[in-house]
Length: 428
Image 1 (cartoon, rainbow, N blue to C red):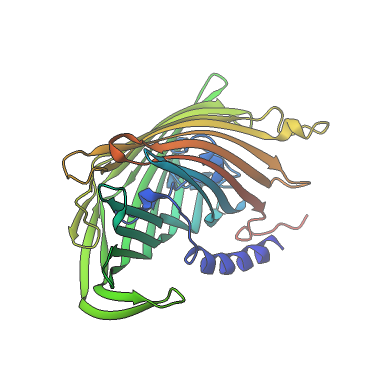
Image 2: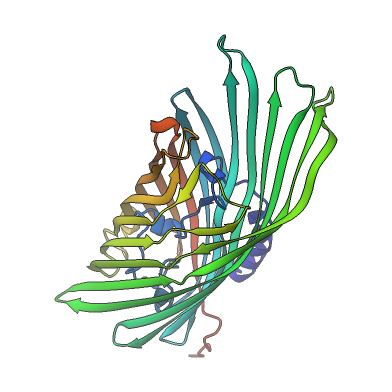
């Protein structure tokens, strides 16, 4: 039954995840959009840790070596509601978006290995920005509106295997694809026609990740170390751009006039090596505390598809601290004792530098910070659970004419554990 349910959901969400608007962040204007954290709802609720986390019941998107520990066919599906408040030195605005974070399936292979496959977003684009030029009497003489939509997704597969006494290795391969649309409309006072610039880019590329975990007993505690390397890769970008003048009809529809140019364009985004290191300590099915550190070099781009004079890339890094606690996983008398309680913190330098003044010489590093809480609610008569995650965070700053985001994310996921149909059934 669960298998049939998963297949139906996979088909529906594969269609949905590529067509939705997943972001309303102004920072999705830059590059190929706002990066989406590649974590499960359970991991996000612990600040995004996971490179040194072992779990036989839940999927792990951070370290492919953890796939080796799966002992049940495990289905995961997650979604998010994001409530966003954007503020600048001139005012503030609120918005919200709903999106699917992932759908994935993990399967144990024998007693020492496991495989996982899934679909999840990589970056989201969804912004609408308006800038005005005023004269000495505060009258608008020129207005420019920037809008964008789209993003990128990835199909991926991961394999992990326990090779020797607590030491596991893993490998992951993914294909990234997507489409990004950017539009700029400029209207000047006392000018009959407006000008519009349109740019469409198709993004394609492959990604590979290597992972390792080592678990050792120290007295009655599990001590775990983990590492993951996302190898350097290139995204190819191809598309078209055009600029033309137009007028507005009485119903607001655009009426194109003269086209200045309409041409094909191409580019390349080089994504450097990403390193994730972490350690954790805990007792199985009782508690766990861990810390992850992630670092990556600066993105580099060629061509004119994602270049901009008001931003550039630098090295990024992220520090995550978190864990979980289960009062009594097999309690019969109290449902609350079987709940998994999660919490975590996240501190991040995103690797994006933005010049809000537009002069090209006053760049500010964009930082991100998040506080997380979560709950894993066991489903009746099953080892599966419903996971709820809450996050409050702040991104950016109003200094140097920039934008500050305050957001509250509500995340939900189902982690469904079923029989491993690859294992031969025994007749008693």
